[in-house]
Length: 142
Length: 383
Image 1 (tube, each protein chain N blue to C red):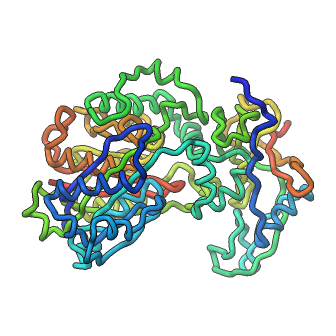
Image 2 (cartoon, each protein chain N blue to C red):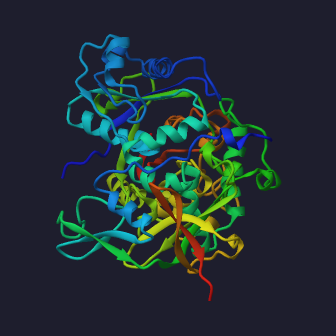
Image 3 (cartoon, one colour):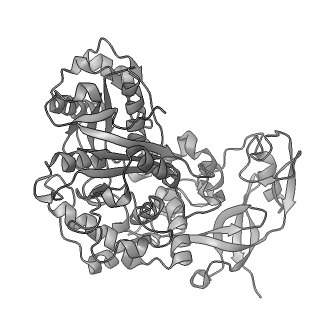
């Protein structure tokens, strides 16, 4: 089927809110930051107002290392959102980064067949435009 | 201790035609099925004094007052849990009639056809999808097949669950649909057909995914003391519960991707009903995707975690098997009416009105709901 990619709609963008902006600002600076409870130190992601361990509402933003391992993945063949039509098939990986934090991000590199649970991955940063940088994952080289 | 056990019964069931598309509005379809359910119970519509519209559907309690001319609507609520909403609504209805707040509660659902492109936009607007919309949709995870593919792949990698076991669920539902004149998909499905269906969100193929449907269904839940002198034998709600998983709004952050909210609800419902798994004659299990059936069979306690794939093999979930599942064909082959078609089918089976797909001697059965990234609900019913 031929279709003009030029006419595809824009990909959805995160709705920046004051509460979540430090996460997206971190990505623009190629840093992965998550909320850390100011009272008990528990890390949490995705961002939210309250610590579920101690109910404190104060937190700061804590940089975590961009190294982890594969927890699961999916390979999208059907572009549910038309903006991703040019990308199919593409792999999204759920990766464990330690301390109970996971991210889900597209796999870059051509290694989808090598995926297995526990495989080491590293976080990369993909600049979309001046306002938006998104995370990606790449299988780590031994 | 107060219990909901046998305090309520389903007294009326109603449906519209199920099809890919409909010329009728969502509200018109919903009212048509509702009137069918009320007539099936042998009630006058004015006897309806409670209603639980589908939480995510845009139909509100006032629509039923307006169209049925209700004078005494004393109870209304919503249970917005996606595909778990309708079985969760049975719990709410049972509470309403058990406390005397209402006597006859209508639980309706209607779906008009929508294109898949619009579904992703609609999902992104739903409050329960807020985190997914912010952190996953911009990266290309936009629809349930993709959300749940990560759960299914984790299960496969952890427990050795196979695509052939997914196929067993799809083929079983299809075989059941072949006997159901209401079903949208009745053409026989072979394993080869399954394997040849196109990949959607690996590990899910097209035949792992439920249908898109237009149509409506409804039931009337009545107080047990009002249920005995209506048109049909009452089908009693013996146990009913809802359950929510950890990290309910972000599957990615859930400690265990292979356990659903229904794992918390099932023990409550079984204890309430006072039955064991061996007592269940028929199970209508929410089947938005084949894997979700396998995972629920484990979380319901029919087998240990990780054994759901093996459980569905060798005809065990077929008609005549140890645990007949989705005797109408389910969301996979009958229609996607958000699982209200599962509730309707269970009532038919327990009434003994399921025609050529009747499970012999069905006296006790269960129905589940699943939705919104992992919420679960369960009702155990008996004749």
